[in-house]
Image 1 (tube, rainbow, N blue to C red):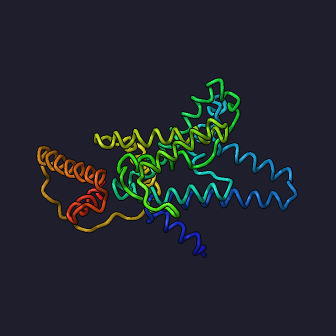
Image 2 (spheres, helix red, strand yellow):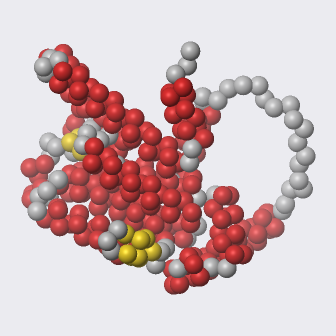
Image 3 (cartoon, one colour):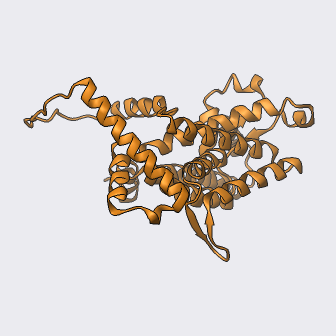
Length: 301
């Protein structure tokens, strides 16, 4: 008999939005690691369990040294789903929920997972480059875990796209996204200068750079994460089975290339004007028609 909790989680992953899926995966990985640590503690640090735990962490953490990375290339992806500290996980997941939902509303839900992965990859690559600077060379043997680089990419992307969007922060009140983004980057640079969590903060800055570049290219009509979306769609299709539908389909008249290009150009121009208006006057300044256009465009992407 299937476990109802497991089945519910599977259903959430299949039907939930990308932000929900990412949160579930991160929490699930954290729970597995936590259970292993509890078993390790209860066993009195059994040598066999210690070896198992170390082997797992060594194979999911991102090694800063390229000489080690070449033997574990998958860790450039796996590390961004791994947390050991509960408050590290909590902060990252809360930030992912807030800023992931905001970015989804103004672009598309389909952009979140590709940007999450790109941000994590950029954070890992920047970390490798910077640790070769003499001042940071002592961290060459370090390993990095956590989704912070990925989530920083989403925060900066949202702030770059809609800088004047306001979040109501506890004890502070409404604050524009651009100021939140600048504060996040400032804290990472400050922490880097104090040699506090160097690998993690370098990953944050790499993610921030990717978030900015992603939106700059997005505004030009280029989707840097399209190849990731295609791969995930292909990979997801491998696990789908069942008979093909026998439903009769009524096909619409195919539009010409000129008609399609014109329609796409008009829609993009409308979206650009709406985004500019949001940047200058905030989301509340939009008319109902403008909000509908933005919502429909988001669901099509």
